[in-house]
Image (cartoon, rainbow, N blue to C red; front, side, top):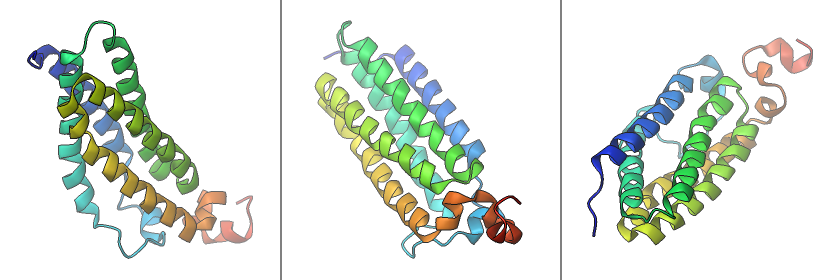
Length: 177
């Protein structure tokens, strides 16, 4: 079995770091809008998200590099495209939820991310079983995040139709505000 290429690991780590940076810069769990959202009782505290995402991102980078290193030349381009699409979807969720303040749109997007996770994991499993298995916690956490997003969207219907209503009480009564 081939070893994981350091060059490939650096490349996947940079791509994953860029994804994490977009997410981190777009997330504002301290905003007044987010604080006013009704959330389920089972939502973890805000600090838990960083504690979970940091090792997940490291695992995505390593598992992807491992699969790319172990794959044949014919399979690598498709695996790179699957990884790029997955990271793009991963990076898109925080701006949709926190910047656009649209839990419903973010829910649609994270459902697409779940599909991408299944496709990426299956590709990695075909290239290198260990690499594919390493992505299972990421896929599992994303399913949990989807359930959390769905609960927030369900408990905050006004945030879906009029994001301004969450931070401007007057907008609740006058949609043009």
